[in-house]
Length: 323
Ligand SMILES: NC(=O)c1ccc[n+]([C@@H]2O[C@H](COP(=O)([O-])OP(=O)(O)OC[C@H]3O[C@@H](n4cnc5c(N)ncnc54)[C@H](O)[C@@H]3O)[C@@H](O)[C@H]2O)c1
Image 1 (tube, rainbow, N blue to C red):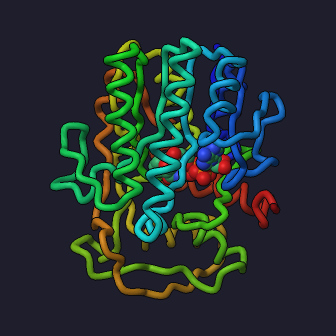
Image 2 (image 1 turned 120 degrees about the horizontal axis):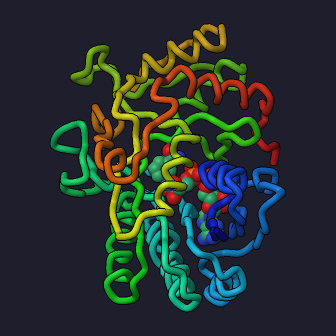
């Protein structure tokens, strides 16, 4: 199949593109490189440099590619920034995304796979979080993703655009070739690895008095290759659905630090800071639905191989993509 990938120069989009190409698909990547990296582009893909806000450009790019499906990774994804600059999030993640939906309809694309997030649930009333729980985002980033999910449902009702909304928990790890290099890194694993590489002084723990066994927040980590595999399965979906995507097991911040210490062999100094507003104590995915309906099963359900793959990539690329 020919797949049109927005955000394919970014962390998740680059590795999903690589896996699609490995599986024999043809890939066109559309990215404005504001957050992504030229070196993260798989050389087997066709690359179109452009911004989703440029309506003519995206309509032309999708019409030229005539893809069987679109995977939409492009977005801004910093929760903290969304609390100070909501306009950026609603313009890029919602308004610019509508240009892509119109491009899909004009080109007769029938399938759309969307990178959504567990942040659409806000602070859940229970864990594991399943898809029946209400979505009450607590920041503009989460709301922008929820709005786009709802817009997608109308594009299905009105234009027959079948869509799969994948609500990721914490994507982590690397492939051999591509890894995680956000220009502003807010994710726990790469930031602890930077301490192990001597690029940061210490790991920060935001709050250690939560009602969890060691007092630190618990999150669900999914290996980037398992996440890519879910996208591949989503291509076969025949009707619109939303699926949570995580391994269903939680690890505390302290546990993650311990494993990075073990894998790298480097002691990691930590600093406990005050808790951040709106950080739920536990976010764990109930992924039963995607397992039963799409047959997804994580190949790397444990944290150790996830961190080993991240560490291997960062050791080989201590300055990330270097741009
Ligand atoms: N990383 C995670 O753990 C996580 C968790 C939940 C959801 N997500 C979602 O997954 C997607 C990918 O996340 P990521 O970590 O790879 O982010 P990323 O920043 O590494 O990648 C996003 C890519 O989109 C591109 N982009 C952004 N706006 C664009 C625009 N207007 N036009 C063209 N290209 C544009 C950027 O240049 C970048 O290459 C995002 O939609 C994010 O919200 C990520």
